[in-house]
Image 1 (cartoon, rainbow, N blue to C red):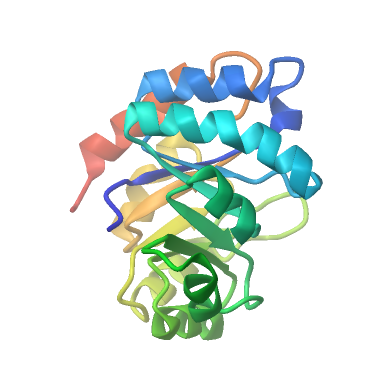
Image 2 (spheres, one colour):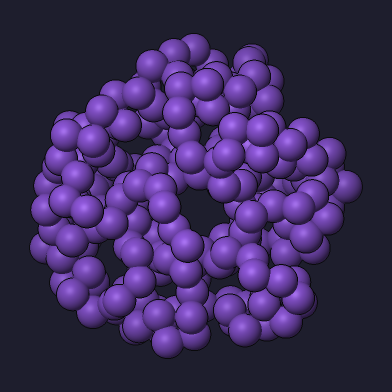
Length: 206
């Protein structure tokens, strides 16, 4: 069951020189309830090493912890779930490998992928980029609304989501928002997270 509206995605390089664990601790203190570890350049051993203490911390705070792509590491550290790239491994394959009620989130970038992941039984999807980024013009609020009308699972808006854009994302049909650069920072991560949580609380339509 997805009971969060803010999905924070890690980037230890954006946190530098502050250790990622310190930033994760800060945002957990600030009230985050879902974190995805997305350190795609790490090998299995290095990913496990950083994932294990974060998993323990998330459990202590009652937060859901997701591992990007690496199902085995998610199983080994007892994560709540995994997050899959667009149209790679299937949801059923992950459930068979995990042999548990693991939560599965999926990245999507078009309507076909959104409908496919919905049919497969994903627990939620992230759709990106909504707003312009350095390499994409973004799909816009209209694109977000179109996808929201096509799926029956929670949809998280991702890409250029600042706190002052939360309201229009929710109004367009998003169940919540996913954020990386807006929160991952060597300083002030907790305060930034609280701004998002405040906007979600004020504008929530759930």
